[in-house]
Image 1 (cartoon, rainbow, N blue to C red):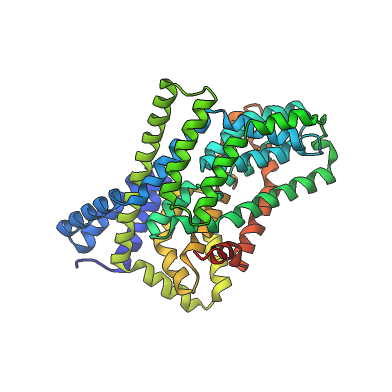
Image 2: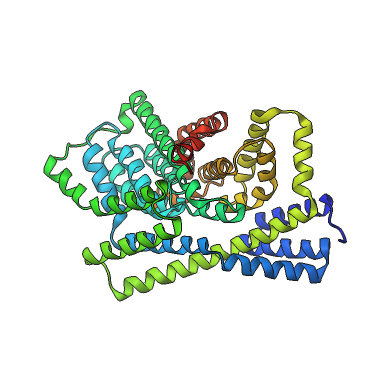
Length: 436
């Protein structure tokens, strides 16, 4: 080995951070730093061989098929008008209450996030449906935009989460167990958002006036439009949690079910299929590049011993488990204010995961923890991506008003993350009960 030492790893890490903040695509930055770093550390020939092995091993992994299938399922639900139907049903049941449309937005984000698995897509899609309705009925701009921006983050905390699939692949953890572990944190996050809305509307009733009560026949009709989607989502997620089928099999069942739903609703055509396949292949290709780059970078970090060196330094500080986790959380939130969420996860996982294992915590718990911290970055001013997605939907709302609206939800996010640190059983209890 030539320069296989922590100093080489640290230089590579700094170069990677500079490339990411400079706007270099995540996958390209990870792969370039990883392969060049390996060439410096172990020699060019060995680096090329190792890089080739990583590429072949990654592309031939059976579980990698989970990601494009769930994405295709989401695209087919787009065609079936899932977002509007989910929000409409929630609005019919809760809209007459004070803040009811805000609750409906959270429910719509949760439902659509469980289908789509993307925070940005969830915020954009539900925002297009929910924001005009709330503003038309007198809701304050701050509450309306803050609710949808925060609700969008449920997209990665409820399975099938693309971020958890990527984490499971690069950390070599069970995707099914990650999906089960995130159910309670995802649902409790949703509950925290509802509590925030309840408190805000009680303190300032004028920001969310009640609307007319929908008669029960309308409610049942709205529910009838989504029962097939709810049944399919329940089958997919319940089947994974109960061990009836693997995540790869669940994604196949979900895609076939979404195809049938789109066909029954008369929304299926050659143009729809072409668009769905094109978007799925484009997005999957980009994510596969990111995964391969992350794995090559992870090998580089391992070869240089950087992760072990950082682990020894953290241990020597003597902060204890909770103190170390709080330092990690602060670091992730700081980096999350300048980095894209996926870049943050892929940059820090190879370094922080060994420390987590040394602390005696499960890598499954760490997956939930890091995705939760990553999601906070999506609504963390000044660079939270969800906030600018919402401004793109509501162009006449100043960005500072959106910042103001999301702050109470951001505070609840920080409390929620602290509880996950303090009580790891929030994530690990359900997989234990189900024997996973």
